[in-house]
Structures are given as C-alpha cells and as structure tokens.
Length: 163
Length: 410
Image 1 (cartoon, rainbow over the protein chains, first blue to last red):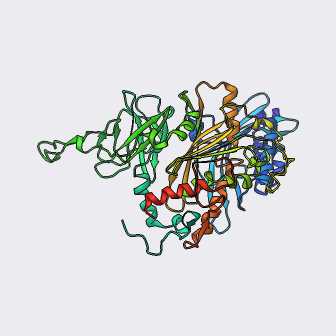
Image 2 (cartoon, rainbow over the protein chains, first blue to last red):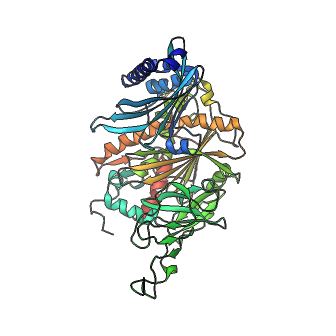
C-alpha cells in the first residue's frame, strides 16, 4: 500500500473512493457493529464544532480514543440511549490527499449528513470536513484518526449516530 | 401587553398541576420575555475566562435579546444590548473577538467598550449642511446597558436596575454550592457545544429539577451508578423556589432490593474502554451536583466534567442550550484529559443527555395538541420544602412554578 500512495494516483483515488463508500455505507445501513473495524486500535475519532477546532479548544462533542470507545458508543445506541427513530444518510465529496508519512496518508474530504425524522421532511443535519489520517498496511486502509470538524454548530437536538 | 385569553386559567389543583398552554402560548411567551428575562433576574452570560484581555468580547443572548459582553481597558466587564441606538441594527455578528470599539456597519455610529456612543459621522453636517440637531447629546444616546455581576469568574447580567445584589439573589445555601465549583480558582474554557431542542425552555429546567426521572430514564447513569435513587441524595431549594440544586454520591453497579423497580438498570453493562469513565474524587461531599439558577443557567458538575448550560429561548416551541465546558488553569494534563473524556456524557451527543433532549422533544409534541390538558406533579406531595434527602420527589418543579406564577401573575 505504501507504493500505492506514492506511485499510483489513479489506483489510490479508487481505493479512497472505495474506503469512504464502504464507511458511509456501513453507517447509512446502521451496521454499527462493523464500524469500529474501520479504525486502528488505538485510534482517534472526534466530532468537534468548528469554533473549538479553530480556536484550539480541545472539547469534542464526541470523543473516542480506541476501538473499545467506539464499541461503547455502539453499545449506547443499541442498549442504553433513549431516542426517537431516524435515518441518517452521509455524502462525501472532494476527497483529497493532503500529506503522507511512511505508513499513513492524510486525507481531507467534505461530508454532509441528512437526517429524516418521522412526520418531517428530510433536513441537512450536519455539514463539515473529515480530517483523516489513514494507516496503510496489511493490504488495507484503516483510520488512525478521523476528525469530523462541523460547520453546523447549532446541532438539531441530538447527535446519536456516528458521522 | 394583551390580556391573557380568558380560558387560560391555572388548574384548581394549584402546584400539583402544570397546564400545557404554558409551553405553547405566544402571548405568555412575550410576557415571559418582559417579566422574567428582562425583569429583575440575573442572567448568566459569560465566564470571565472567555474575556481575558481588554477589548475581548462575546456575543450572547438574554432571553430573545442579543447582548454583547465586553472587557474595558480598566479590566471591568460590561454588557449592552446588541442593537444600534440609531436604527436597531444588530451591529455585532462575531461570536467572540477583540475590539477597540464597536462600530455599526450601517451608518458607522461608534460605541466604546462600555456601550457609550462616542461617534456619529457627519454629526455637524458636511460643508455646513445637514448634521444632527445641535441639542443631540452622545451620552444620552448610547446602547441599552445591562447591570453586571461577576462572582468568582462567572458573569451575570440584568436588564433591571432594581435587581438585588447577586449574592442576595442566589441566597446563602445556593451560594455555598455555587462557590464549591467557583471557589476563586482561575477557570479555563475547554470548549463549546450548542444544540437546538424543539421544546419549551421551561421543560429543560423541569428536567434538571426532576430527580425522579434520572433514576428511571438514564440507563447509562443508573447502570454505572453515577446517580441513582438508592444512593444518598440531597436537594436544596432557595426560599423563593426559583433556584435549586440536586446532589448525589456515586454508588455501585448492583441490583438490590432498593433499586428493584428500576427496570433500566443493566447489571452486566460494561464499558469496553473504561478510561472514558475513570473519575477521581475532586470536590467535597458529592460526586454530582446540578444547580439551576433562575432564569437561564444550569451549573453541571458530574464527576470531573464541569459545564455551564445556558438556556436561550427561541420562541415557545424551542430553546437553544449553549454549553461551555471548563476546567481550572491549575489542572494538570491528566485532569484535563479526564474532563474531556467524561464530556462524552453530556452535550448534544452525551451518553446521558441524549435521553433528556429526546424526551423533551417528545413532551413538546405530546402537549402541543392539548393546551387545555395538564400534567400531574404530585410525586412526594403537593407542596415543597427547602431541603429533601431523597430523589423520589417533584418538589423542585412545584417550587419553580410557585415562583413562576408569582412573577407571571398566573
């Protein structure tokens, strides 16, 4: 995969498109149990308002530092949280490689998540930028870091499913 | 002020009922703005740590009204309405920033950091033509100012000149609990979180003033023993009924005779990564203290996560909850990490607070179509007293409405 990152741009773009399509597909289909497998362990997954990100304020709306943490979020969705039914559908565009190290590539992309609640029209729920660090190895790509910096700072009530 | 609709009468059962029209009525909402948020109350507006330097400002709200909080060159903190004295323009649009002065973009009327008008372009006209009347006084045409009270780094503002001093307003038992978190140590802002909940603002206060729900709704809280009715509890209410605090101690995760009715307790619930919830003892006496300060603040201390939750009204059917998470400048790196990890419990994606924001939305939906029905508030009797040592009570809600009805003349 290292060779892929440096020498084969078309193949890399296809691999990234595929990664993000599989990632959002997993979440859109609510196959949350498979979601932690997209990450290394440990990892960093954060959903952070843009104001905090730009002002170097560390508070995240959602913070996970390992696969265990990610699984705890899934456990909350499945077992402990009380919330109304909803669909969330995610769209990713403008995927671009902005940096690379010996074993990882740094990727930015725009995302938008649309929320559909019963008795209401679909609305834009959360728009932002993925700032990802993707580990390359063992023939696959995993998120070592996935930071969702969101513009939609006034959250429409609750953020329950991952972005 | 329009008279209330004649059928809008509080139910005969008094404090044991809350009529549903108070969550939906537009005339009542307008009266709340006038009497509560613009009345003789202290509204939370900022932490001084958000405004460390001269010229630093924050744009926020008191009820529906946008206000600016600014630090002057002498270090004093001022609050004024974000509405140009000339034509009403909301001149400040940035949420946070630093200014030498505030200039309205429309006609460039300029104000200092105290809200005084200091400049009107072409005040004397141009080439002896035009200009303001000769008796137009700058000092009589400044911004509408609010009174400001700072207590150990926390800034409150009031539209009413006659409001009592903040310390008398909060009263000694609540002030003591306030000072437990705000003990004079310098605060450090960790970040912001905002959410818009489609429910009336009073439902947010009722939620915090309702320890009965906490022990039933919140599977996460109950199962991990963060707050449960079979653990020691203490509630304190000020003599007017408007402020309150609920305290508890963390307990074990186990099924006992006392929690047998808590169907949500999952004894074998485990965290895959326990580092998220590894609190250390930090404050005397209680591991959780949630304080409600009339009319717009919830002070949250849950284990090591500290936050101000500011209520901002957005019409009868919605409110914004603006969270400011903080710690202390003296915190070491480990404590900051702990606060940030435990912040996962709270906010728009909180393991615990999701349940509340969702249930408040369900409540608003349930009551909107039935304004003439009312809710039953009879758990633990029909009155209230200044202190309770258990959680199976709705006395804080009854106390809140006792005061609310006086202010609103309902």
